[in-house]
Each structure stands twice: as structure tokens, then as C-alpha cells.
Image (cartoon, rainbow, N blue to C red; front, top):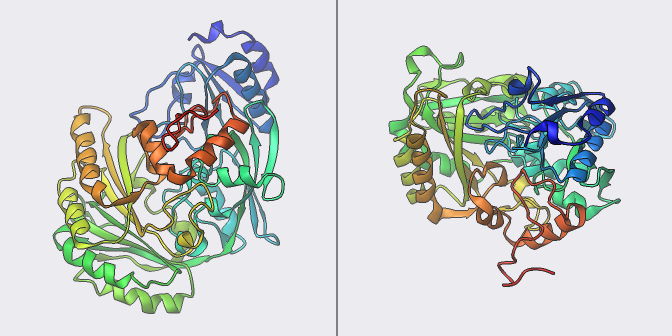
Length: 472
């Protein structure tokens, strides 16, 4: 579709405080760039919105013309949901204001904010909410899909802390949603992805955290991984909720925190974040430090804001990314064997195998308590393929991820929506499980025409697999 064929484009441009970018504009190619360089799409229009009214105007414009909408917050979706072909992109990158109400312990966060905007603002008051592992991640995508991070075992998922939101719905209205005004809508926003509209403000509950945490990484050679993972399994079995850990099996990246002699060597790292009493943390972390003979130990008392940015350089924008993910119960020996075997075949210095320890506050919300699932899972594994944009064999990296995913499938107890990629409608349906029909009902209420479909889409007309019929 050529943007010149869309009636009313000039009128929309005049109505916006922000900018309307078309393919004829010099900045078009830059404006359609997202974090994952493997995504290459050509929207008809890009509305760089300056506020909620701009978003509402652009949504109404799209609805009148049946144009697909993609909402771009941080643009960090591996599946490229912040970009569409032949439709309109709602680019929220100018909407990054964060306002903290320390008395209510609430952060008001605009829809285009990144975690690097949120953490300094909340930490100024000694407060925080579970944020992205990479500080350049958008608040919107992480929150709406669930939100796993270093603080989740103590503070819950990001979505669990979403208490109110302002949403531009498919008819161009701006609605305020909370547990009083529309509890079902709030339930769906807590894990239902970007299916229900463009969120222009998130109200996030905050917790006392920091400003200093005990955090860093303990690194072992990958050859020691079987023994390290078995000992780690024992130590975290009764871990306090103040402890967040993420395993990572990969080639040691060339970042300042890692000595040059280790760069490119196969390693397993235990990333640690203790957010409670620091003296108690020193005692508990001593057990993690005693696993084998680590080649590097950077765990120390440091500002939480600093720690939240330590891995930013390991997944730079513009590289090509492809991943799969499963939730599983525990690190039983067969699971460890699969992980070590496939991590040993890793195909790129940019690739990684992060394994997130769940439980704690994540598991305290009952299944069905929000749109997010797998409350009973012990861990999530992300098989993270990555490669340089030029001169590389994409299929080799994608095959490694898919083979790894196939090998983990017998151990899967669920899937994390934010880590889906190209699993298709059946994969999305399976990820939501028993919550699917309730989500479809909400979708039919707030977006019956599926205007917002560049997401892990809950199709309002999707055939009901369980009932064996199409809902009326």
C-alpha cells in the first residue's frame, strides 16, 4: 500500500503534536528500524506521537480505514511487533515521562518509556518494581506480556504490579482501567500482551528496594556446568525470595566486566541479585560462591540502577535475533543434560541460554489470577540465537534454536508469552491455556475487529479448540 493512497493523511498530520512519517520522508528507514535487525517491514505511516491525544487520533484514523496497527514502545520485541507492513505504527518513543508518587508507592509511566527511564526515577525514592534484564527494554511490552526480571521472586512480575492504566482502545477512546472501573480489563492487561489497545500510561506498584543491592556474576567454565547446575539446584531449592538468580550458558562476551582472557570462552554464569538485607545476603551468597572453582566472581554491593544496565552491551540493537522458550519444573538431571549438550553447540558469540529462576512471589498468585500463566513453573529457559547482519548463515543459528527447543519440549510445563517468536496461532493458544476463552471474550468486547493484531494475537474469531465449535 502506498501512503499517498490513504485518504486524510494530510489532515491527520496536521492534527498531531508529534510527527507523521511516510515512505517519502528522509527519516523513514531510520524510523522503521527496531532492535531486531532480522525484522524488515514497511509501514504506510509512522505516527511519532507526542501524547495520548496523538495516539487516539492515529487509532481513530486507522480504524476508519481498517489499517492494521503496530504499537512501538521500546521496539525490543524479538518478533518485531512494533512494526507492521502497510499499516500505521504508533511510535511512542517521545512519550517517556516517569512520575513517582512515593506516598502511594506508585509510578506513573508513559507508554514509550524504557526501563532505563524508570529505575533512576524510582530509586531516587528507594523504590523499584521488577524491570527488564536489559535497560533498553520497553516498559509496555514487558509489562503487558508478564515481566520477568531480577526482582520477580520478591516483588512479583511486572504485570502483577500493574494497578491502573490509561488505554487507547480500538474506537479511539482513552479509557482509565483499574480494579474498580474494569477489573476484567485489568486482568487481561496483566499478561494478555498488546491485544486490547495502546497503553499510554502504566500505573505500577513500587516496593522498597536498594538503592544498594548485592549483585554480580559468578562464572565457571562450561565444562563444569553439569556439576555446577546440580549444586545450584540444591542451593536454590529453599532460596529466600530476596534472592534472584539467572543462569546463563554462552561464550563469554567481550564486555568490560569480564577479563579479556575469558572473552569467547564457553562459560556458565550465575547472575545474582540479592535485594534484601545485605548482611543476610552476604551469608546466603557464600553458598553460591562455593560451587566449584569459579574463574570470575563480580558479586559485590552496588547500586541497583548500575546493576540493571550491566548486560546492555550483550544484546545490541541491529544484530539479528531468533529465540524460543519454555517453562519447566526443575533442573532434574535429564534437563541438565539437554541444556549442557545444546549449549555446548552454541553457534555465535552473541547467542546465549539464560535460565530464569521463578517461584516466590510469582507463584503466590493462583493460576487464572491474571492472564499470565505458568505460575507453577520453577524455571524459564530462553534459547537465544543471535548473529551478525551480514555474511552469516541465518539457517544455522535458527536450526540450533529449534533443535534445542525440540529437545526441551518433553520437559515443558508452559510458555512465556514475551519469549514467543514464530510459533504461530497454535503456540499462542497453548501459551494461554485455560485462560484463552476468557481472553477471547475480552478481546471481543474491546477490539472485536482485531485492529490491534501485531502482537501475540488473541483472534476474536479464533476457533474454540476445546469446545469443538466456533463461538457465537
